[in-house]
Image 1: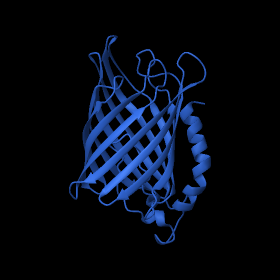
Image 2 (image 1 turned 60 degrees about the horizontal axis):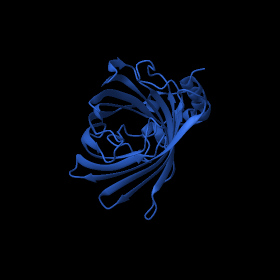
Image 3 (image 1 turned 90 degrees about the horizontal axis):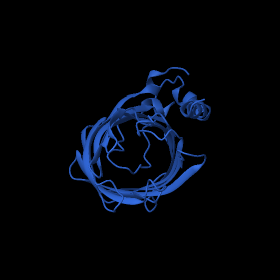
Length: 280
């Protein structure tokens, strides 16, 4: 079986009982709270950091982003990445994302193709209190769908496990991630490992507009991927509760970081799927 087939099989075993519980026929939202969940978006863009807040139970959320990155040495990379999030339970959501279009221009020439695919689960196990942050974990696995010959994919399965913490302090909202990445070695068996850190600070400039500051970085993965640190400033605009736009730019802070990256994106909550289902 392919990586995504294995993951989806495991996902089915884990969440089918929960799906059956929340999607069962009920006469009122009080009998089944997830059927009455409002269709609103909980945007994660434009940050590298993941918040502990999960997609509302039963809600399917679509997000897409277009970016251009200048790694250095005259090279550039264009990437159209999108995916879907779905709130399985009030504290658990499912993530699927893929690079639908990747264009690379460097010393090896111009190449265009489909990128890598990631599947994941995020779980919030402790809600925020007056003095404590909310806590969660996020596991994701990469299906190597990118073209190895074009240099767009690694051809290997990767795993990522993140510890998440979020806290509101006055008008400020903070999200912190500790990220452990296990990347399959292209030329041999086993995994290379690095650790990532990311801290996003959100501040509402107005009722609709928020500004986001985020330093982030990773330790050395291998000889081809050395440790680096970068900083991002972005903006998130609420068109309506289910529809958000974002944009931003980040700059490398250390020698081996990508020199610059600019991006735009959109997040849209499609519907509460549990409200459509009368039995499962």
